[in-house]
Image 1: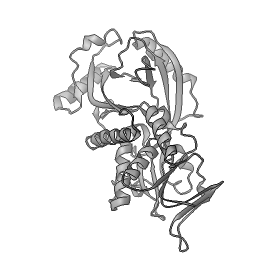
Image 2: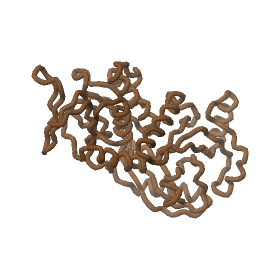
Image 3: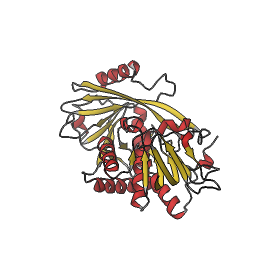
Image 4: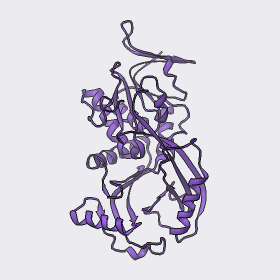
Length: 361
């Protein structure tokens, strides 16, 4: 039986950065993840946007999130021996209406850390139909999630820190008077650990230990398109966002276009309705020719109060959860992974806005 400090279930953005933070702190970790190919993290754009919503207000805790994210992605890239997966990029937000233009002007007059005027606005008139102007958002960060997940999974395999298998929660033996550790034995897998943390995305809703957590799922979709001539040095935010996709060498014309928030959906598959809606949008707003190369879809684990979950089970103080990151995974995961590190190593309580005690039914 292999003994480790922490078993982490899942290798999306939450499980990846959680395992990295804990190993960096000196803890031994085993990640259990079936394929590494499924889930919302694999089809996300990777954007960290410091403002949100039609009223262009600052994203929750962004002043704390940005430096933590920058440091975390730089350190994990260094560990993996790859170019940093975090690239600073400005967002060019095209105003969709006079009302949005007025909201931006109001925020700019009030003073904003992240909103900027765009001095060379006319340079972009050859790319988009801009009826009501645009503004800049800076700094934003684009995370190369595909490169991160692939390189990190290879690192875990090379260092014998990954079991590529489905985790059966019914096979988990809890600590009791006869044993001080968790024990997991299933189909040739034999593990013991001091901690078990579920970071498994949407399947946490079926986890028997966290079925009362107030998850709220939504479906997101995106198209991957090739747009020769559209500069990849910015992220373009319109009704849908256009985000550089892949690397500049092999994918020099590719953009991720999305996303959607479907609260009522039949399945996790790409839909004709979304493709038609985005195609109509591109035909109306984009002035360059484009070609659709792929269509992505996944279910996001979010929460009723739009805050993530981090904390321990009410009856089992070393059985934990990290989930519900919604569309903010790239910015929230570094912050919550560090919170878990501080909790395990120092006993520092979780922020009350994310702690499980305040986010249960």
